Length: 438
Image 1 (cartoon, rainbow, N blue to C red):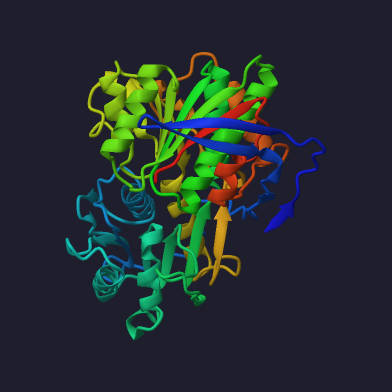
Image 2: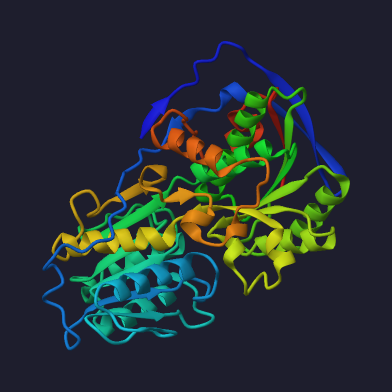
């Protein structure tokens, strides 16, 4: 982890008021007190091509088997489960697998299956039991989408059934559910994302588009969600600085305390839209987007920003064009693509994780195109780009500057430090009104 302190001489103090259900709380903000550092990013590349001969040992009778276990949701969660499962099946289809069905790829030399934990058993033990079912099927690699698998992985480390199984975890740290450290074997790898980078892209784009009053509704204040929100504020501040705005951009900021819609989150979003204190809201954290979407519709289809996946393409949750047009963009983790890249690497290494991945938690981001905003060229659908004033050409230039390090985005995820000190951004460009969830 590379650490750098702000080299700032001036100290700027600003008192602001965050309104919550009619009450107010004063927050003193000293933006220079927020430590700046960047997560060390691993460039895993973008290769999805299997080296000649590497799959020759697999046949329809003895296939390469890739399994997946869902976390607390289902395969159609429009987020981690669905995106990772799509990546698993696309990998299979491209490399000798047969037709993709609802149950997975059941024919060919690369086959897939998934298991969902028994309803009511969304616990470490319940997820572990589902993992054992996939292991019993004969999976060579098991994909585990989401940090909720940390406890299940800690159980798998003690079980002989997983001695020869390779695990690909997404967003998991080397701890159990109680925060106790665990040690990955060389058969386990985990990938976390630089969410702050795609949050930055979304905030920057929103201000360049012309929005001056922004909102953020997060799910639970875990590091991934915190980085999303912090990046959003940083991007908004930088765009305001470049535009030389006479007044700072403002951000209404709230955590719902759940990865689902809540009555209070919907109420806040409606208040912000109706009062004009938020012209656009970034919804960040599982199904908490339902609160923002409900508020958007109730207030005349106001604009909002999605997260994790290209939510504009989700025609099940947003069946009408009017529904989808409220989603201006999405701060994406390129989960489907990342899954394919990592599985390709596993095969090309002869059925094992390479030395960078094995027994490690690595961080991916813009360098290997694992965080982004959706564009028509890369993600399909001409209307997934909801900006009129901020062009794709400007976005591509911004993205290159993040990739090459010209733009550095703070990875700090200390929620107390960030929320008390304006997220480390100069208040002359952007001020954050943090609404406590307590």
